[in-house]
Image 1: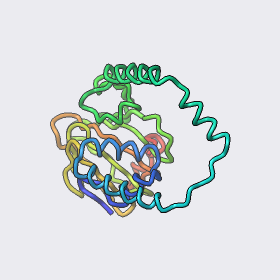
Image 2: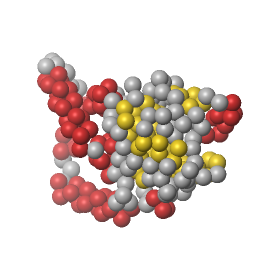
Image 3: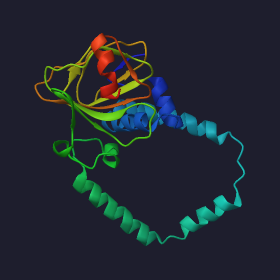
Image 4: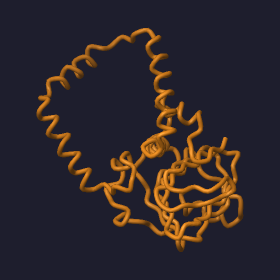
Length: 222
C-alpha cells in the first residue's frame, strides 16, 4: 500500500512491536518527531501493544539476569546524571537543529558538514551505520534531477528533510514520508529550487525497471 505524507498502519504496528529493522525504525522515529498526527496514531498502537503484554503470563528470570540488574542499580545516580548531561551537551553541539532528534545518534554532522559521496552528477549520498538487510542512507538530489524509474522488492521509507520532490503518487515536502511497497513503480523528481535531502531506508534491494538502472544498480548499493 502507498501512503502519501503519513505512515501506513502496518508500518506503525510493526514499529510499536519492535519488529522493524534498525534503518526502517530510524526513519519512522524521525517522522514521528515531525508529524503530530502519526505520533498520536503510534501512541494508540503502543497502548494496544501494552494491553496485550499485560495479558501474558510472567516469564521466569534467571539468577544471572537478576544479578546484572542489581549491578546496574548499584551505579551511583549522580554519576549517571552527569554522564547523561555531558552526552546531551555533546549532542547539542553536533546536531543540526533542522534535523529530527532521533537522527542525532547516527549523524554527528550538520547538513553542511556531511561527507557526501557522489553517486552521479547532482546526486550524492551518505550511508548511515544501521544494521539492516537493505539500505539506510541520506540522499541529496539537486533541483531538476530525478532518480531512475524503479519498483521495490520489499518496503521503502523516504522522509523529506529539506526541499521537495514529486512522483507518480504526489508531492512530498519537509516532514512528509512515502511509505511504499512492491506494488509501486515511481521516478522521484526534485521540484524545489534547493537540494532535496531525504532519509531513506529499504528492507530489500530496489528493482530498477530500465536497462540503465539495472546496469548501475551494483554501483548505487540499492
